[in-house]
Image 1: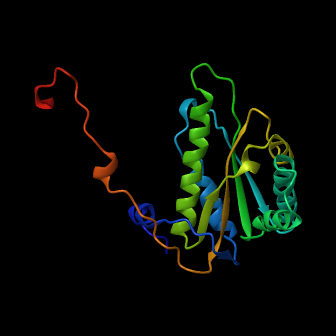
Image 2 (image 1 turned 120 degrees about the vertical axis):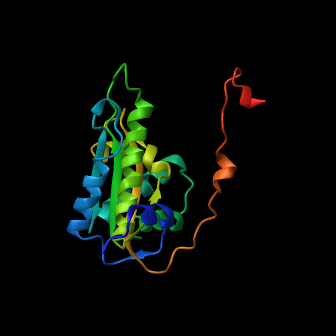
Image 3 (image 1 turned 45 degrees about the vertical axis):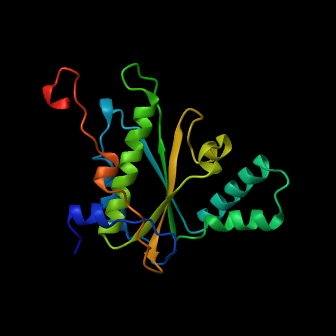
Length: 195
């Protein structure tokens, strides 16, 4: 049974210790339905998702290693192998992107934020269904060759790589801010209660 929304929102934590089984087809369908409900200014539908599993993870690992090699030519073979292995640290990877359109009323940043909101919806759905995940980026997310290989245009944005699977160990709860640490009331200068 899936957990309620508030529990999902307040208990979700990133977990990078992942194994089989990967999220099942029904969970992925729910993830994508939830993602489609995220805020989307202008209903431009910028969200794009690439599902990477099986041997395709090895190909993604090669793309990541190639990015590292091009950005840092002195990278050792051991570091390249470690980078290749990152794509194998979960049985399923969702590459989330924003197909950015030229729109006068909807700036590119808002289209990327829409894809980011959709990403959070997918993370919460995975958590509510009993799976674990972690949202990563890194140089590969911003690399033109990686974007092109994954079917994105140069003006598009890769928002992140969601590594998903079954938790191999319980995630350590992160230190969370208390509302008083980031919420404040804002008043106009003419408001008598502001003084």
